[in-house]
Image 1 (cartoon, rainbow, N blue to C red):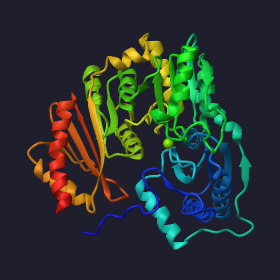
Image 2: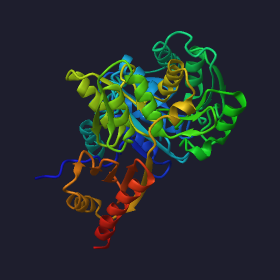
Image 3: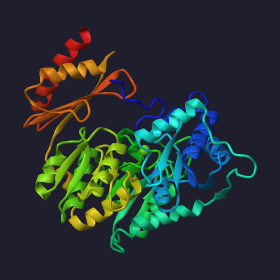
Length: 454
Ligand code: MG
């Protein structure tokens, strides 16, 4: 049987590379040409705050225009804002962003008319056009036209605010750290319109990222934590470089682990309704605990937000009630709003959650079941073979092979899966306590260690 075709250039969330080396205006223009050759009509183009954004944005627009599509340049905005606008108004979108990667990176995410990132099959077609140079280049009478529409982001802001009772944030102080990124305007605006008193840090858009790196890791959030404490805020929220993710600091200054964030938001979204929660096999088992509590069910997907989003849409289309989804990395999907990870919506939902729970974020987080999670990268020349050995070794147990292999036990589980692009595997082990996590971790390492030595 022939190997299924794989994406070569695009990864799990678009194309990314180091600017001037792998990520050049020439490549991005050809991506624009390929996109406009596949999708006719009007294409929205946006970017994050990276220094290379204007050059690469101009390049993608040049490609789109040359192949006869109209361009609406929506300016600097979060990826979920572009996704929202595409679903409302446009035939496709191109977002110039490298998400959480360091400043020297940039890239492109392609958005389809439904607001979701382009799926694997269509992306492979786009790559084939790109590699073959098969572009629909137009003559003078058919090249595209361009308009600028930076004000459209206000529609996204209002769409989020409308989801919550008016004034729900009144009396609540919050702190926003957009990390010098594209939510510097939108997330504070959303929270202000909900009635919150909003303080900000790193809220000047700046592609040199002077305050912290685009990945909102706990070490980079000292300034946010400090401001939360000093202002007596209910929480602090920080985004990654394109604001499709949001992570939180509680009112005591502690970082809320992203799987805990997922569980709290899941309980909030599933409280009064029954249906499905969709998440990758890498998410904490707390998702199952909260499902048991709220009478909901989990549908597991391979790792990658695009698979979560598309599974949610497919299940909804076939008649299932899907209430919530996302990943245990702060990338949460609220399907009543839109089928993509949305950091601004997540910040707003935290205001709604705290208003409904009438409790503090630290006590809500502290009341959840405790787990111990171990994460590790394991280098291996042939990751697939190692995964097969683990499958064979644990064949008598409850296995889930949605992505790599997940071993499910009563007090622990483990996921071993090959990286999509590099010669290593990711191992996640979670247990009710350190002992059960370490026991399973040890058993798996015995097998992988032997496999790698062979
Ligand atoms: Mg991102």
